Image (cartoon, rainbow, N blue to C red; front, side):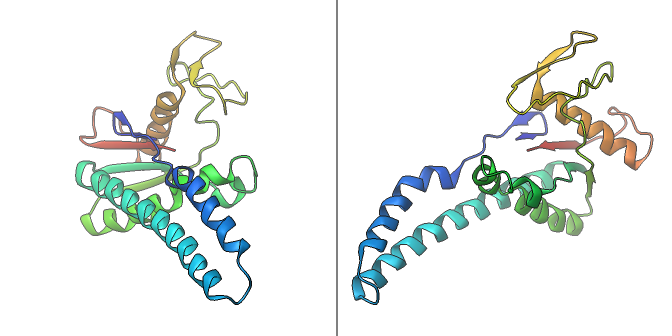
Length: 189
């Protein structure tokens, strides 16, 4: 996730607790239905899930508070997360990132602080060169480095996409340049 001029690593709370959750789940399912031991094991599984939920919520609250305190304009991609989680290969990682929760928390905090939130269409933001504007419609899902085939510009793929998102966010607000706005934030998931 690129925030401002720095990248924040996704903490992957579910992935880190997966082994412990699997062990607790096996112990739960091994118990006889209706028994006291099964009830106790169910509480352990629920406690692990609740801890993961609380960790995600705490992390998104911290990030959203940082964004609102430090930036006047915050631009997000308007992602269709319900469609994205239909891909069984990516669903767990997308849910673990809590993008929707981050956008929701940032939105209500920004509204109360008088900041501007802008959601832009994510179409081709990761496939467009920020220098020359050439769009190479290729699947960039696994590429960490963006390289333009036209002007040979090379950059981190997330940083290139973030700059395209910020440019589109500024365009939707009016014809502002990057230098004209004092405190900007761009967020790429």
